Length: 41
Image (tube, rainbow, N blue to C red):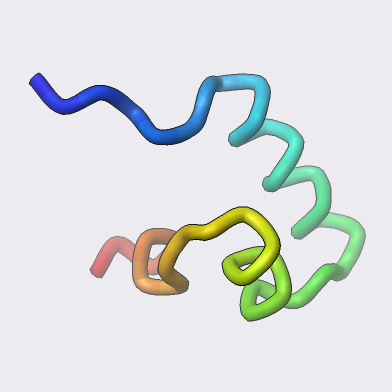
């Protein structure tokens, strides 16, 4: 089974950043994930 790249706490923090209006493009660059990961491919 594949290990998750981010911990639960990290995911929650990223989602909180998104809630306050930080663009997905900026979050993906900052945290190193693809934008398609949020869109379900």
